[in-house]
Picture (spheres, rainbow, N blue to C red):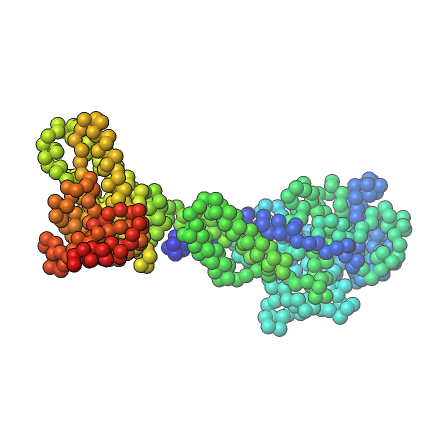
Length: 636
């Protein structure tokens, strides 16, 4: 199990390292982002001025002139916002009004203009070049088209540039006495207020070798609904916006018109509403809102676990999957527990996400399922082999109930491809037909075999019915064991086997009488039988070659049972079935059996004397001790 779980872990780590699981991990990240509760209401600190398609039609052109931009900034300045973010490129003049716009930009340090850093770049307005009023508005888009990361700084090798969003947030926070500075414990990290923003690394979270240039961090979007107050350009230019709507706030000016194509997919705009995209101005508003929340300590940055922690997390789920595969055999229970495990995993990772921790979920889920499935397949294959061995040894000689018990307790006695040899307390039964030699000489071969098979099948069925195991057929003889292959641990269990063996012998006698009646009607010879029963310790195990294994018992108990069967054959002439048992069996029997003391005898080949009893019946009229007492009195 451990080897399979380890190999499953290494396999998943391998394909994870190749980046094959990144799209799935990011999809789960997006799902968690959509599922997490949004911050209720709008962020009162941010206001949007949107230039829509209608506004462009009203202006009659795009881009709008410098005169129009100058008027926008002038009217916004009257509201006295803390910062104005102009998300419209002004790298080249768009007359008329260019001088007026230049004067407006240089005369109001609350205005933050944009430039573009990557893809050839778009310069800042010439009059603001080299000032702190310009920030880049570059957006990081993942290969699947989703924006999940923000930027704070970019470095071209000569200068470090601030992002448009960070400059707006700093302008707002500065009034509250909150600044950005190096973290004391790690100067490479940015401390914004009391929040340390750890820079994103290439393999954080579900990413694999992502582009981690600049100072990046994971975005935490507020919600997908109306998160910010917004006004149209027409409303602003007509003076219809109340003064309190923008006072002391951050105002973002940008385009929402479809024709400008400044739109992005965010995690919350995927799924059922996959066609919905966030305008650039809205995306920047979300980013600024997150930075403000971090600065005020209202939230914490999204953290990721270390590579070592992620590997340990995945390994734990691989081992848990192996344990489930090892312990669970029912397909229905396997499916139920497999699903439950996935629910527990995703619930745990989602709760961690709510606490601003992004942990892998796809990798551990796959190791959980793969490890469980492979271990289950391996164990099932091993069990098939074991079942084949066991059924080869026992299926034809035991009842379905005993076979089920053998399989359920196989671990107690199965060792590799053979049952483990064990000493155990067993009741051994030997039966033999009387005068079979003369009978066989008087019958033709086919009728003789049919007659013998009828007898053998009937007696073997009774052995299985009473919980015994047919050990061997020897000519006209049958050897059976009661108490194998699962060892008996208590006196009650041993007694139950002894009682079952004697009850089986009595049933065999009754069956013999029924067969004799049947054979007489058919004009066939009748038969009689001798049975010997003894209880004691034996060694049980499989003997023979790998192609021809046989489960059997050996030991003195087996020999004594065989001697009891053949003892004093003259006694067997009195009835169709004579049953002799040793005292070691009698002491385990209950009061329902009537026995008759034969005596203490030296059996052939045995040095110690064996006290022998004959089983009279199982009607329970008198106990063993009462019969024994009567025999003792008659001897006097």
